[in-house]
Image: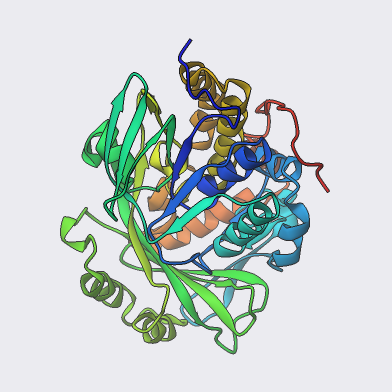
Length: 413
């Protein structure tokens, strides 16, 4: 047995990252009587962000955690996906109920920032964690008795378990598991999104997408505030390391790709420069042979990321957080058993959730007019009565996952 902590308060747990996965695992630990420390590099909670969905096991986790009332309060009124041409004329409409709320637009959609706030509100109601904004780790040293962590502020503290929930470019993973290049696979392009004023002639409540010649796609998605919307841009092309952290270069690439693209491309470009929440990153896959090393364990995109192309990032973060908290709570005096059991139970779900949709990024960003027309023909075929059962099987592949049942620390509403 590996002794974690002699105190009846349970193990000392550090959570690196105040996103959905980090806050979900912190919430469940607090409810179980374990008060973790949570580090978030940002100075405050990050509002907004793209819409994320809840379906299958992730929805069940949200229900078990009692989050659904808050989620329903902030739920987006998004009714489906609409494909448009350069003139803005609809070419294909796919209502959310076409695939029983399990398609590209699910029956429960919420902005990432709002979902995170629901978690933060529940965490505060449960008693709160030792939350530290504007802080991150710079060094981790493990020994038989625990883990010594150095923070950016210079503070040094010891913990029994360190959870890396700090995203695609995880510092925790870099410090303990090695360089990002050893576990990251570039998927052929980049994605950007940001908030912009809602164009007057965009159909309300619909996620509109437009494909441009040149392996680029642009979309406009409803926001919680009808006066604003989210622009989303997919760009396919070779990896360019110079784009990392160079916002000017990132926006220059988007301008080059959207120039003369018709529809609302000019409005998207006009809003991009001053957008307060401009986001740009590569589409990458993160895979590791193990998610724990000693007393350090990875959660969500830090350990298993299929990229936004899978549509399963939020699901993996929530389900992973639920299992990790459950296993730590079940094995408070044995960190090895807790982390091993977490991985053994979660691996089957992640293996399925990480699968890319047919065609991957190429299917979203055809490079020629013929490719755009061919892609639209395939999409129309998917909506036919004959093909819908097959599409439904692909869309629901993670729903057969048997979610472990842990003792509930809060009654689901």
